[in-house]
Image 1 (cartoon, one colour):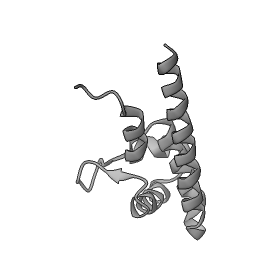
Image 2: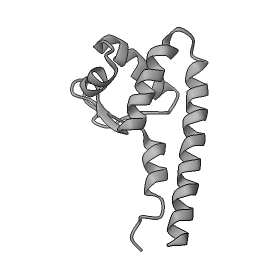
Image 3: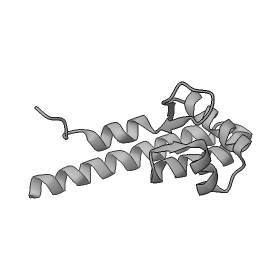
Image 4: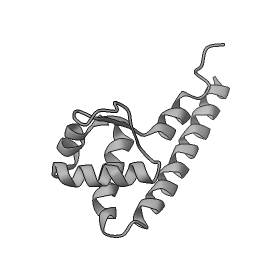
Length: 106
C-alpha cells in the first residue's frame, strides 16, 4: 500500500512539473497565449477532447480554439489523433503517458 501511495505522489509531482513547463512554453507564444492557456487547462481536465468540447468547456469560439490547438500542436504539447479535417480529436500525449506508466501488462 505504501508503495502505491508513493508512486501516486511521484506521478502527481511529475504531472505538476510538466504542466508548469508547458504553461511556461505557451506563455512565450505572444498574442495566442491567452486562448492557448485556456485550451491547455481544458486538456488538463480531460486529456482527449474534440474541438467542439473544448469550445464548450472554455467558452472560446471555434476559430480561437483551432488557432490555440494549432499552437499546442506546434509546441508538441497536443497531438491530433484522427487525421481528418473535421471532427478532429486531440490528445495531451505526455499527460496520458505519465498516467499510464506502470500499468502495462507484463
